[in-house]
Length: 292
Image (tube, rainbow, N blue to C red):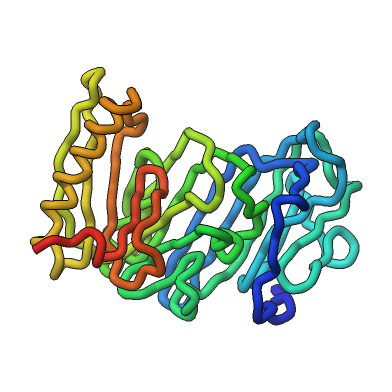
């Protein structure tokens, strides 16, 4: 049966560099499905783990904060609380060491409520659905090793009502999209380059946009998109020009050529930072990106 962990602690716990230790197993590939609906969002996660010889063997600990865990399994075998895993405090799932192999896959089914998320951390809804995962927001989306030394590739499917969320964005390149039953639709995004969980990004909503292209020094054409609420679209031109100049500067100054097929930026009014450098999907506070 679905079960909520105990209430989350009121204050964060300090973490120190001196206490750092490599993990015994680390996530390598992450496959996420978001089923967005008005009342709640279902998040299905499938994560491939591998043995990390630099770390000590031990139980698998997954950060999981302010979410409802509906089910969890390893290699298709459902796990039972108490027998196979337990909660450490209110926000860490501990899977017993005896269940772990050199390679295994953990699948979870969770429910979150972005519309009730007033921390603006994890996935929240404020006009649009938006994420903020730095520093430790990803654990509010799905159980995971939410620390910056865990680098994994991501495949993300976003499903949502087409009328309220015609735009579905995430990191990487869009690989497919289409319609679903009941007035819903989906988009799938693949980011082949490993990244830490704090750089995960998702945006879904009814947004306006402007579009252009950028040709890299090797001749590759990159599709550029700047998104905002419809009322702000006429203030996006400066952002597009700034993006192009920044890409040129990266090439000239550092010899770095952009390696994805698309680069999107979203202007968000309710955002608790100036901007967030999520790979392929930058999110900016409107105060830092709009220009009349």
